[in-house]
Image 1: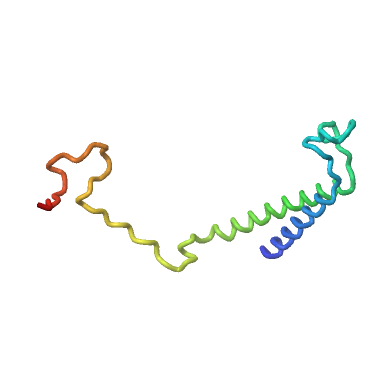
Image 2 (image 1 turned 60 degrees about the horizontal axis):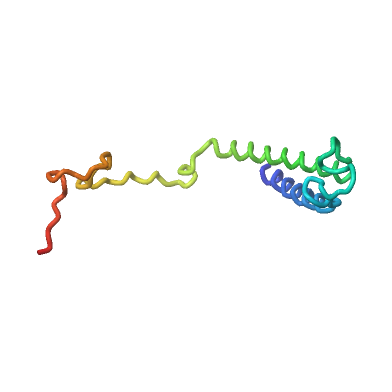
Length: 120
């Protein structure tokens, strides 16, 4: 089921790209260069056939996006990543007892410092 929805999603994406590229360019951002009363800043844009097809394809694209998200969430909710790998979780690291715990920003007191042999 997921593969079918994914193929439909990809075909919708390609069709949407093609339809958007076939539309007439308005020129300029926000309809500045359209020359006259029409454009993106008017109350209602002209509803051409390509515009309607774009809205239908965009709606179908959003629906398939939501469907793919729901399918992926259902598939991943039953197990964790470690269950799918078939291995156990990594063991916790052992900490070195000679190192300070990191709770204090001050350097260790003279009696708490680890003994380091001097190279004389």
